[in-house]
Amino acid sequence: MKHVIIGGSAAGMSCAETLRRLDPKCEITIISDEARPFYSRCLTSYYIAGKIGERDMLLRDPGFYEARRLDLIMGRKAVSVDPRKKAVVVDDGSEIPYDRLLLATGGRPKLPDIPGAGKRGVFTLRTWDDAVAISERAKTARKAVVVGGGLIGMKVAGALRDAGLEVRVVVASGRVLSQTLDDEAAAIARRLLEAHGFAVDTRCDVVEIEGDDEVRQVRLQDGRRVDADLVVIGKGVDPEVGLAKACGARVGRGIIVDEHLKTSVPDIHAAGDVAEAYDMAWGEPRVNAMWTAATSQGQVAAHNMAGIPTRYPGSVGMNSIDICGVPFISMGVVSPRRDRDGNDYVELARRRAGNWYRKVVLKDRVICGAVFAGVVDKAGVVLALIRARARRDDAPERILADDFTYATFMDVIDEKGRYFQEGGKRNVQRIMQGGY
Amino acid sequence: MKEIFVRLARCVGCRQCEISCALVHSESRDIHQAVWERPLPRQRVRVTREGSEYYPLRCFHCEDAPCIGACISGAMHLDEDVGTVACDTARCVRCWMCVMVCPYGSIRIHEGQKVALKCDRCPDEDEPACVRGCPTRALLVNERALVV
Image 1 (cartoon, rainbow over the protein chains, first blue to last red):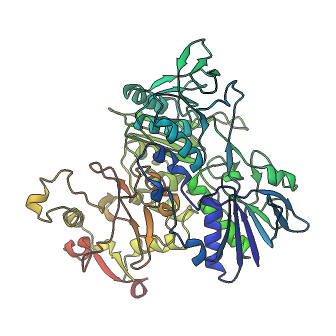
Image 2: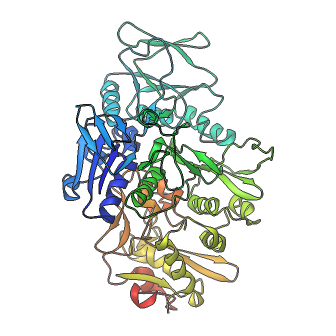
Image 3: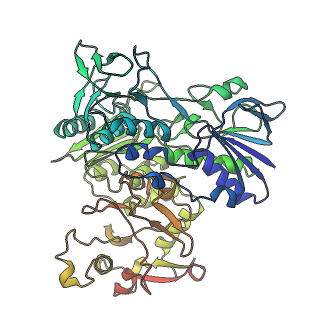
């Protein structure tokens, strides 16, 4: 059996490793358009901040690919897929045949149409190479403008501040982290940012990037001009669906996959930031571009590619971010609107002194989302509850009162939770029955 | 492979396991000195009461650990020699993805050091400290094959 994987990050690599474990004999080729072995994309902002070095970016030891007989083609782009011939064409003209193909092509930063965005000193952040370029520039730059207040924007803003720059964040919506946090948590985040010396403009946009060859200042929507010698644009990520579209796969926002992570084209699977797979909290397919979802989708895709039918239970969109030393975690439905059938979600929230905030979101009395600020311990228990889609009427109050542990919800999590795979189930039995 | 098991019926909620755990992870390993250490030594096991029962909760060292899949820095890893889920705190970047996904709530933030805090099953001890400290033998360590 010959497996080809396009994309060498979280989804591609976890697929490759799982395939090798399941089938010691199969051939595995990974095509990556980055000239780097497997590294952690999520660490790029830490790299810019100077908190970690080259070695810590890499997630596998040298010799890893050889030891597992993974044929890695680095720095090459797959330009097309021929599903009839079952072959991938690479940009050096070579053709790589496959029996099963995984599209793990990830995403690409959105580039809004800002005049002057091509000037030197203007960046997006997705790859390690992007991070290297930004940190190089940050060595001499003094004033940075970050366009966009999403996760990437926040992480890069924090990193540039750590690197000693003055940082202004320009956010189009009314709050920072508008996709990740609700109003209250976002307000806490904003207060923290401002207290730590960040300038934050909401309901504002950069309309032009000015300077000769290099960025000198940016012009804001309200007419102000602010000095900047480094600009990072973080306006979100689009799934890289070009290859999939061109070979006839069904594409929505991402590549549409079934419960086995198969695309609409035979023998082609998709996983990671490019896949539009089932979301358990929303109850519909969504693109959840997260490291943890990419890893588990890669594993599930590998099983199916190896001929072991395995259902993907779905993911819950979630994120964890540290703002000025204060942890925030959000999961599932965070800022609900009326659903398609016109039913309302119920939101219950509690605020305590300091930066402590917590919210749970319910639909049909079942928890489908949560926000934590300040204290995030045990957030994973709530995630397990969301995944279990179990109704426990005491759950919202106990979560908001911080009066719960795994033991509180053990029965429903275990009974209905599809979270646990075999290992997990045994773990639970172990504590319940308590040995001999 | 050895694992820690819990006989729930024997747990009386004395929290001696918590003290033993914090102590074995302290600098001095002496209870009279450890209480003065800053940051205060922290326990990785927590006894919680639910209804009339006590549950000593700690990391189960899952076979298919969500925290390893979620870890963005490679700090959380499977120690294949001893079969534990181990955290290389030097590589921890404090993103708390592991806290976000652990269904048992068994990974916490070390308030002092600001790193992910979890059971390491006492790699340098003959017997895990919580097991050694348990006066009712509710906690015990044994080969998995003999128990499950």
